[in-house]
Image (cartoon, rainbow, N blue to C red; front, side, top):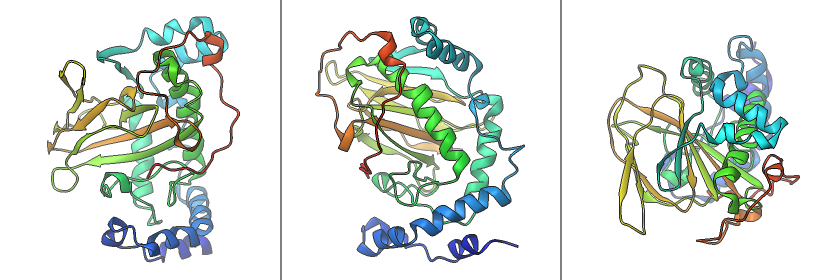
Amino acid sequence: MKTKQLQLARALDLPTRQEMLNRDHSVQQFWASNDDLISDAWKEWEASEVDASTFTLDDSLLDKNLREAIQQAWENPSKEHLVKALLEEVAPDVFQFQFFDPERLTVLRGYLDQVWDSNIPMRPPYGIVLNRRGVMLDKRSEGYLAAPSFQTFYNEMLNTYMRPIARLLFPEITGYDTQTFGFSIYYDPSTDASIRPHTDASAVTLNINLNLPGEEFTGSELDFYDLVTGKVTQLSFKPGIAMIHRGSVAHAAKPITSGDRTNFVLWLFGDRGRLPAQGAQRPVIDATKRWTTPVTTPDGYAPF
């Protein structure tokens, strides 16, 4: 028998898509008034309906080479070159690397499938026109995915992996990486097929593909624009691959023409959304300062 909080959350009437697109006051009121109820429902759902032995979210889902290099760098920052060797520059200041083990992605995707079937209200990403199977991941966002084991996993991705890698590649973002933000995004030819050229309100963006091996799609390439040379570099995702770049790099998702694509998009920025100045010089930073976690409090600022 379902617990009372989970039942109550499932019985809520989610605001309509049009109300959310219009940013009606009632939408914000819905999330604010039901925040505690929905958070409790996620805890109860995970405790009662998720098989923890099958859907364990931890670093065993990540690429073995990345996991081992990151662990060595945390233990001894002078070994951070082992991490850098795994990062390939595929466009000016855009780097690609294997983040998830493709064969282990079935665990994460299985967990996320259960999230979608949970019938607990979730808030889609407003900033990308209410992506239909997207959800907010960070606690600063109303209607976020508050399941405890997911939140632990999400924060490990950001704090253990993303931030030191970002500092290694883009040292000027150090100090502008105290706050986190994240969402999932889903591309499908019949609904949400593309995103026009834009920049991100982040110091650094990490974009990770969640497609399983054999889960093919066509189209949906990322175009990266070099505003100095005018050159456009077109890149495609493969299962478990991540791309990392400054938020100021202009990029777009081309229309997907068949299949579907699922990604996590993770951001770092400074307190209250502060970003490094455009063209900021790259300071020389000691490796020991890169492999640290800022002592900070989430400030509640959300870009969208």
